Amino acid sequence: MTIYEPEFWVAALQIIAIDIVLGGDNAVIIALACRKLPEKQRNQGIFWGVFGAIFIRVLLVFFALNLLTLPFLKIVGALLLIWIGIKLLMPESSDNGHQVDAGTTLLGAIKTIIIADTVMSLDNVIGIAGAAKGDIGLVVFGLLVSVPIIVWGSKFVMKLMTRFPVTIVIGAGLLGWIAGDMSTTDTVTKVWIEDHAAYLRWVAPIVTALIVIITGKWLAARAIRKAMVLTNLGDNKSI
Image (cartoon, rainbow, N blue to C red):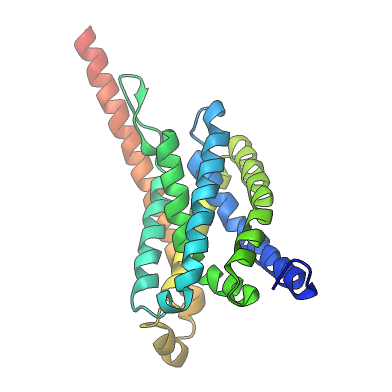
């Protein structure tokens, strides 16, 4: 297809629509990963995180059909998302006043965005590849057009997180929900669930979302208590 053919623009609009719909999840990931960065580094984190995620997504299109048939791939991806969701709920840590938490560094934020987006894109690329009908140039075009919308969405979500911290918990829970949904559509679980336990399609996302939130909040509270104890010990030594 060429840009002069109506089919090109129909397919391009389909790809853009798919990516915008899926961009809500991406915006949450970007906002969660970049929220601890200094103001000057946030735009860099957003840009390079989105760039890396889209580059990975384009590569995934080449292997989409084969990738999704690999047993246990989605289960591994679901576990990875659960880990990321819990990690994003952890408080900032410090060492003698210097932030050392990976989420507070530009490289750490970019890495988190790329890993999470790659995991979440395993299903998404199927729709994109189908709309493009094998034209990788069309895939790239559609994704690039959707980037500004995803970036704007992530900045909006970050503002919400700054003003309403509860949205951080909601975002982490969303990752848990997606993880639960992925685990029920893996090639080794999908058929059995459809035949014997269809209710797991709804129960699993709820359970994994709760696991992320409860575990993340518990670990965060424990980290805060530990930091307070260490601070008190340091104050006592200085007296």
